[in-house]
Image 1: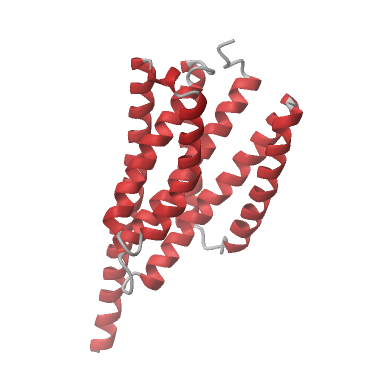
Image 2 (image 1 turned 120 degrees about the vertical axis):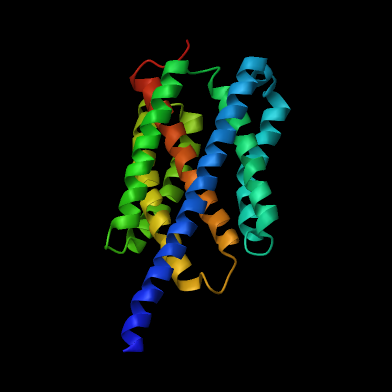
Length: 234
């Protein structure tokens, strides 16, 4: 009889722990988004966005691409350091995004933010609730992303607006799929390794992955609005 009483109790404890983990992960991801938004607003309001050009912009972009790998490497070893790195990365991302305010209108950026938030929340909920294993979807989306990045680099030299628009639509689909997969993947990782590793480090890892999904959704939707909806300042 004790076994029947113990099993429901363990299930409840696991669900409580999972809910706490997801709250922490999405909370930190949301905090990173707010930090980026505040940084971008400050940079634009103070005129600092204009200074993000030339060598300073190049250095910022290099750090922008490299820092996520550093954060991921430290998340399990030094969770507190990784969390600090996530906030620093959010500031750098905000600085980079502030330069987009020089190209796109405030209306376009607001529309892109609301649209990306809607897509993100929808796909995250799907990732949390679906019974289907999304591993195959995630693998295919990752492979498609690699090919898309190569195509985007080539288009930098071709300067085709039509291709850029098509690539942005494809990117939105890819990052939407990755959002659902990353959400499900982090749930599974917690349930499998939550009692063996630092849940704080695991939450930082998940927050970083989801933050990257959201930022890329925002940037690609912004480009679609800029091309399709006349959101460019010029």
